[in-house]
Image 1 (cartoon, chains in turn purple, blue):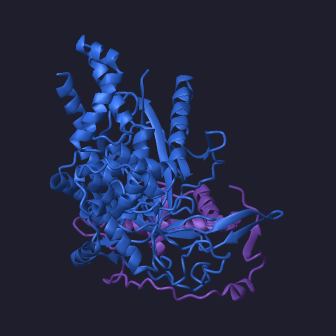
Image 2 (image 1 turned 30 degrees about the horizontal axis):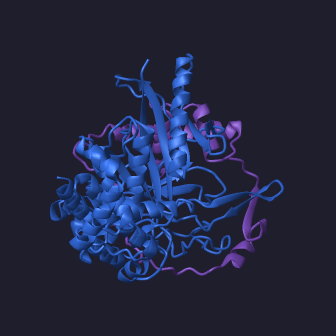
Image 3 (image 1 turned 30 degrees about the vertical axis):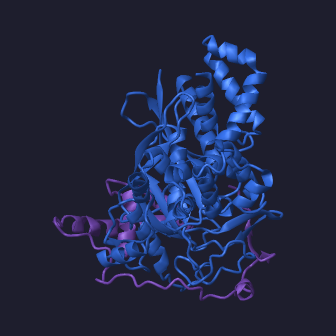
Length: 111
Length: 481
């Protein structure tokens, strides 16, 4: 899964698969992860290594093979449409940093 | 230069389920904040999604209704973005493999002053299952936003069209048709005020006759057909003027302001479109088998297009009438009930589409709330058919029924509307009228056709509208002959 995620991210960012520091910072920003310059350099090395692995795998001829959507050959079990959950607002909000009138409060967001 | 507008729609329909897409929390609208937000809805660590069977069946129903290709296996993906009303940090949606693939919807575009009514096929690109986000309340506390997660996780089916529409009228006709269809097959309540049916409209313009699509701007969250029409017309004009003034169109998301009638670009969310979709490891592929489709199909009502064909063949209605009467399931049901109660189909169609619809519109009532039952309307039409009352008198009886003054025969009696079909009585009236209007008789004999109609009018007036007009015509012609 990790590989797949990394691959997807890179697909959307950089078609020629070579990473640079700006790509790392952008990925970190999108994921809201703070990285220092040295961490960014370290992450660049690690991710480039993963990409190298993907490049090797891309060399394999997969013509005629249906893309795998899950590692096991099983399908989704479905749930009957029944309300089973009761109101536990008080319990859940007892661990929230700030609430008012039943609402969870967060720093102001403007559309 | 002549410009052409190109429009595609994305519609979020809220599915009519009791519980959420991936949890057993209730979806009832209007509950106190966060009382229907369970541990899955608020995304506590470690919780897992379990897919709602009913939501899947709703998607299958829609696929069958638009004759779509359906994926035997479809996949749920994570659409990643950060916003406080999305506590997981991603929305579970479908990306590469949606449950419903390509299909078609035929729309009826109504006539305008300068154009005829016409039909058009709109191609559906896909429809996929996903979950709704919560709601933000911005004025709750100074400097803070309040978050209500009751709506988070509510099942949605997002329906996407090809860029097939070429005017605001076509886009609105499509939206209305889709709105009726999802209610017809019972997958969505269609309540636009409560946000159960929301449209995003992609609009671009290009020089007429060219192929290449212009840059589009997306008008978000339109929740009324009137606003949709206004927003598209304004946006189209704005794009044309911008291009003609030498400007360029930037791809953007815009909001429609109903107070000013204008569209305006939202502050662009930085890198907002980089959603980094990937398959959700918490969910397995969704399988839809032929047996599933057959089982769902057996539970579905007759579809509007099938009913329309049946109205044409069984009742000999024109294609326009058949299509109007199948515009909604409640209208079609009412019409069938009138016919089943013994009314002649063409006459029933005329009254349902004419007097009844006009009255319902004027009082802003839905047909389901009509004070006049289908059986009462059928009884009224029977009294026209057997010559007890004239068409004009029938309109008064109709008003009486609407006002709850009693049953058809009682109202005819009380208002004294029974038609006079007795030849002797009518002849007596004609003789009086002829004697009193010698001047008109002379005009008619001198070749003025109009004078004849005036004389018929005088006879009807003298009978207080009760004389059978066909008989008056016939007898008067014989007398003047």
